[in-house]
Length: 143
Image (cartoon, rainbow, N blue to C red):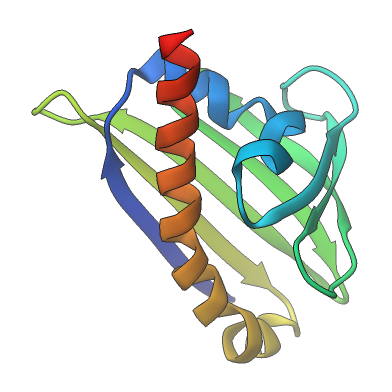
């Protein structure tokens, strides 16, 4: 298994950021890393979907495996001989901001290629995604 954790602190309300972060169909409108994203039902454990990031790699089917409203959610994608689990956390900080965390765990033989070929780009792209999440939640709040 190989894991990386990306996190930051952003401005916003739990309700607003949660609503934005879980509105998966809207990601291509605000997340610079997402080309297309589809969810096939309600935002709850067991719901499936499809995600394709910008670039030449093919997209992948996923399944929501855990949803703890306004706190945490996980999705899982199959990989050859294993799986990728992406865990998302949202928690208020003492200074009125929000700590957002995204943890990637790769299980199985794809752990090494993931580490060598994808981890750096994910870490670098996370800052852009978190900033876009903050901006989109603020834009929605201003409406």
